[in-house]
Amino acid sequence: MIQITPQMRILLAVEPVDFRKGIDGLAALCRQALASDPLGGTLFVFCSRRGHAIKCLTYDGQGFWILQKRLSQGRFTGWPKGSASASLRLDPHQLHLLLWNGDPAQVNAAPMWRAVPVAG
Picture 1 (cartoon, rainbow, N blue to C red):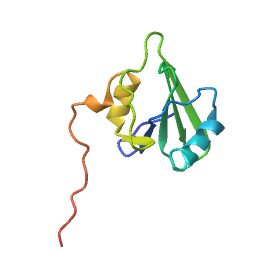
Picture 2 (tube, helix red, strand yellow; picture 1 turned 180 degrees about the vertical axis):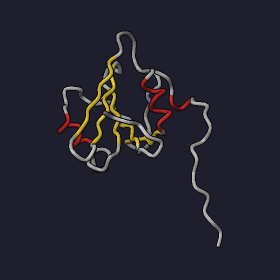
Picture 3 (tube, rainbow, N blue to C red; picture 1 turned 45 degrees about the horizontal axis):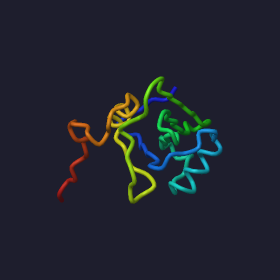
Picture 4 (cartoon, rainbow, N blue to C red; picture 1 turned 90 degrees about the vertical axis):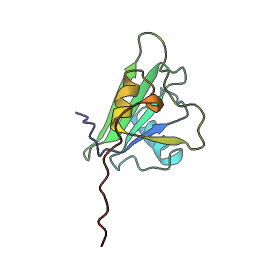
């Protein structure tokens, strides 16, 4: 089971991918296009060229998980367009919104908690 935790690192690939790719093809994209290790526990999020489906890839220490959601109607409207980098970092609540076809850039939520450095 994939559990999305507040500490999880989530990377969204900005450019759409060929959804004929399986685990090995997406893991290669993680290494090459996103310059990230697919074995590091990061959850990678990809969108199809037509924008009607999303795939997520993650490694849990024993093997890869791949998750796909295809909309019955329409396209994912909140997918980021043309960014300077190949990937964007998402917070878990932004991923949940994206999976429900919302726009993660428009989320109006409290900022993620960060530890305050101790002055010494």
